[in-house]
Image (cartoon, rainbow, N blue to C red):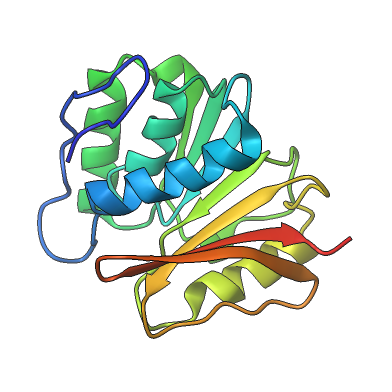
Length: 181
């Protein structure tokens, strides 16, 4: 795994040991960021949340492309270790907030991210459940973009959200959502 673009382009990421997490493939990440660039134009100054973060590849990719800050939420100890190593490698500690906990354990929002990445375990529906809960806890800004990666067999439907785009990439299905107007 490597950073695809930006300041850290081509630099390697450490993957978590074991098989508890499934890192987003470079090709799927490239597809996702292409979708986002066409909608956002730039990542400059954004506050992003990388939920079910694993190695932190999505949040670190956004930081590499100019995002101001990233919050990473991951509960697996091996993944948190890899995530912290990646943040240290890229000297991004001052722009990163790592929370070693479950996404479902997050409390009410103190600040709303501009962009939320979710890469939950496949075939669990965890992305939809988490998005619904985060919405009720005030995490979703009216202008936010939400990306949920699932298996190709899964769909994402959450009351109060519109699906802007769905793309298949390898074994992954990428869903971009917006709060319903």
